[in-house]
Image (cartoon, rainbow, N blue to C red; front, side, top):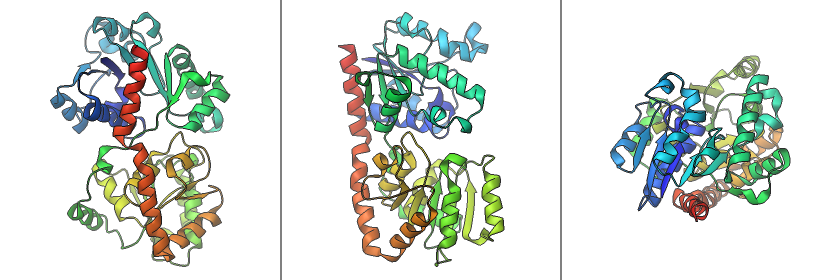
Length: 378
């Protein structure tokens, strides 16, 4: 088959939707490359490690908005002009990886698929500017209305599409997000200890990975850490700061928690697996997630997880993680204490968590994707 993908996020986003796109494309190349040709459409290309791997693979053909009128109108190319290539290349399938499709997708002979990650902007409108909500809603609805098949990355997202957008259930297929292949590699002890030394990480620490924003709910983690009797297990925080950081910093200052927290901001993505492997516990009490990829990354790193009992997070975490009310800091503190003080319990969480995570292996998810593409083509 000839399969096209909206690859803007794969080349331009360093996290989130970018990680989803890169992991999906790599998994298809690795496990489903035989007999298939992949076309990547992106307004422009960032010369990253991903770009280099794509260029050297021989399985991907790149298409950019680098000629004619669209050279300076990237948005128009991605929304309209790109479909001219679909017919020229005789694509069988075009897959929008990040919630949208070209507005004129029906003018193409290719069957269309769109991945919808979440409808958080509908559920929690106060977290998004008015204009962003309007743009998202227009693009998401257009994609859902025109796609031949919709992929939801969790059962939670599928149910939201049914409840909030009135999409017929049979049009939606759940295919979970897979983790990046770097979390499947064998542990490199030398690199792991190099990361510990570089960042002066203590023998035991708690870990949070995610954007520092209200929805991710870092404040509840800080409140839980403050309750711990063991003062020598700090919280290491990795992620991009937003306006919400002011709330976090105010709490840290008020309760003199500077020595119990370590902010690292955005780190090299290649170092991230070692943080998970070194951490005693990964804590992620997000209010709502479409899937929650950091939870999967932690499980694949054999790290005990404490996360929310809401939205899709129980799907990602499995029954052997500790699931809490994300706004109940006492529950979070109790979970931390239990894991830190009971080695047998912690080891059982590591073993069973890793076992649960295997259902999200890229070989499994890529097989599901290819089956969907084949069903559409036929």
